Length: 193
Image (cartoon, rainbow, N blue to C red):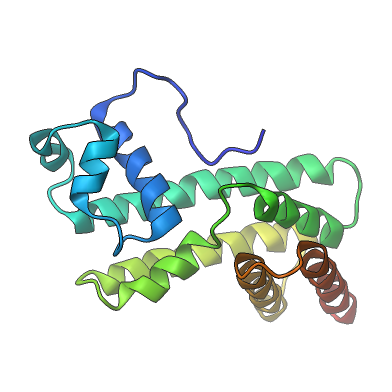
């Protein structure tokens, strides 16, 4: 089952409960639209407990982005590896992986593209953007390994194509069309290299 949540244990620590709650709220609504009081209420913790673990909303945003990066990269890498075992073409493996993510009921686009768009209003905008760039770099590294790519330019072109597909899926474009265009674009980029 597709999951971007690390812990399903009902007896989780307050810090993790706050982080998981913030993750779900920030990813679904954005961090500007999500207030601390809402996180406290949904996490069922006190303000004292919240501020003991996260002294500011900025600290929680950074923790959220790092958490999201970790769980998404783990999911992405393991899903690609599992699909690759069927000896499918790398472009098909990548397209199927993104189709699985795009089709999930919780899909709200790329948390890092979304965070970058919201970063300008934050006093930690450079740190947010740095985490987002690092996420894309690690995604690129995984893709380079999958396709056995040595050229960064080709890998960056693939990332741009994927980011476009993510945005189209987020906008509600026809999913079959998005995945077909993604797969066709990947095939063209790789065969031209």
